[in-house]
Structure formats: structure tokens, C-alpha cells
Length: 463
Image (cartoon, rainbow, N blue to C red):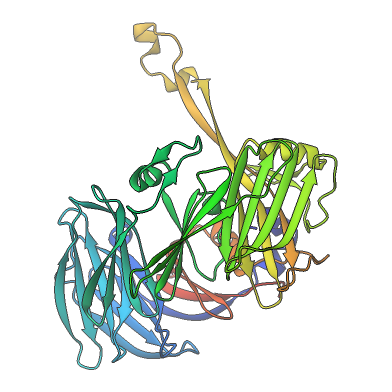
């Protein structure tokens, strides 16, 4: 979706970039932008919005749901110098706890800020980085989660921070069998080494470059969904209960093609699994019910067919250049089969929005011009070569009803598309952070010219 908007913005920028400044806060980060951290968070219990601005000092701005400033606290950076602000949680009393990470010291400093008295309490949590590596961290339901992979044991460790207490939970994957693309048995750690986990942002549009990952993690309340698509034949899915540590394995066969599939992948969305299989002559899409495994919708498209469920042209984009249209399905499938394929599913108020395609990279060595070889004339060496990486994607978009009926509607831009274009057009914007709320998104950023921290509202659709 972001790719198409780069093209549409040339024609409709005055419409698509429409947005509203919600509030601004004067602050001068001076020459310490590279050492500054910013975090925007919603307290999901009270719907208050918090902004944390960390530079020489820490400014805590508390807004209500209408973005009126309720409280401001400025405090010192004691205990957090040289540390990165990675997350936040909220206690039942409504006060925030911030998480400051230091890879050198191998710890996280937790500081709870009592806004009523402008006091705080700090704790240190030692991260076992000698035995584990960090996979991801995220905030969910006012808690903070740190997920790590064991170096020796075949499993994951989740640290759940709630009300100032860290609870450690080990997720054991040693009882399960894993096979690679060539059906050779591998350990859980070997599979993740070859196919690193990509976390999907819940409730948001996940772009094509993320969904082409073969290992995807979906974060749900007290629950994780891990999908593995290293095999061409099936999706191996694990439903993880963070309360009782139960792990349930489910297997979903990939949709078949007349000739062997060259690429395949899947995407989990609201109790359904969307699966695609691709070769240069055919594309197969299957939507299965998560509980029963039953196919709810199946499509098969050959190179001579027209893709009936597409709502956009068949497009190819190289780097950040304007996308160009591919002339037919055959050409699209030929290009798609050379990429890492994926499908993304996003639900807005009206519809389901699907992006189906793939991403790839080509590297070329090009002779360097004489001006780039300072020692050429002294040593009489032959021309040097340098590598150029070219990133490309092929894709189309589809608009469905929430009952999985295809439509003829045009894809409207998402708030994320507008935010991307806004950032692309405003070079003085620094330290951008996006906060997704139920009805709109907030872009927070530091404006270098005005020396303000600004919150802007972006909505889906044409304004």
C-alpha cells in the first residue's frame, strides 16, 4: 500500500496528506538529537495519552483522550544515562513504568514515575544475554513483554513485566518436529536461525517487506501465534497460551498448484489463515478457518487468466521509483516467482484490505569512476568495483467485505500511507513515532525548525 501511495501522492497530495495538528510542546533538543529518545503510549485502561521526551532530562506529558494536556512532569535522567528507552507499562494506579536498556551493561533499568509527587523508584533487571538473545519486545494491555531465544535449549523465554514485577515463562519447543524446505529435520533453533522471526504489529497494516518473512509472530492478549512457512507444503502454526504455557501445534497444507510451487507463505488474521502458493505459471490463494482447518475461499489463477479479485493494477516498483504497470498476469507471475512472496491482511471500518506480492533484491558490481579511486594514478591498479543493491517488489491490492466477498471498490489510502508520505515530504521532521488508536493514528515528531514536539492526527481514506 505504501508503494502505490508514492505514485498517487503526485496527483492527490493536497487531499491525501490532509491531517490535523492536535497539539505541540516547545522543547529544544539542541545538538543531542542522536542521544534523545521519544515514546508515545496509550494507557488502554484510561485512554490517556503519554509522551515521554528523553534528552538531558525526561519530560513526561500526560494528555486525556481528547489530547488536552492534563499534567507535565520534568525529572532527571538519573540511572538512565547512556541507556535507550524501549518501552512502557502502566500500573493499576495509572502511573507509568519506563524500561531503559543497556546492551553494554546487559540490563534493563525499570523506573516507575509517581506523577502526583514527582518521585520515582528504580529497579535493575539483569538480562541473560550470555544464554539468550533478544527476539523482540512490545507493549500489550498496559504490560511490557520481552521475548528471548535460548542459545542452548530449544525454546523461547517470555519476560512479562506487570505492576513492577517481572515474570519469567519458558516456552518449550523441544517436543515438536521441524523440517526445512528440503524436508530435512532441523531443530527449533536451526529453523529460527535460517528464518528469523518477524513480529507482526497487531491491528495495523504490515507492509510487504515484513510479511514475506517465513517466521511470523502475532501478539494477542495473553497469547502468541507463531507461524513457520519454511516448508513449501505446509504452514506449521503454534498457539501459545502465556497463562498456562500450553503450546498447541496446528498444520495447514498449502494450496496446491498444477506444477510444484516455487514459493509459498501465509498470514494469520482474526481466526483465519491466508495461504498463497506461487510458481511462474500459477498463483493459488486459500483462506482457511483456524479452528476447523476448512477452506472458506479458494482462488487459482494461471498465467493466461485475469485476476478477478484484484482492485489495483499489477505493479512493479524498483527502489523508491514510481511503480510501473505489468501488462498481464503471465508477466506478473514470472516476476513474482523470483521474489520472496507474502500476503498482508488489514481490516478497517468497512472492509478487508489485502496486499499480495513479493519483494526481492539484486546485487550488481559496477566499475567505480576514476574520481572515486584516489590511488589509481599512483599505483596503476585496475578499476575497483563496488556493489549496488537494487530492491524491487511486485504486488497488487484487493478490497473484500468482512464476509470475504470480493468487491470492485478502489483501495483508499491508509493513515500509514499518509504518514509515510508526510515524512517523505518534510525533511526537518526528526525522531518520528506512530501511535495507532482505534479510529486514527497519531504521528509524534520533533520539528527541528520550530523546536517543538508535534502530535498530528492521520485517518484512513480520502479526506
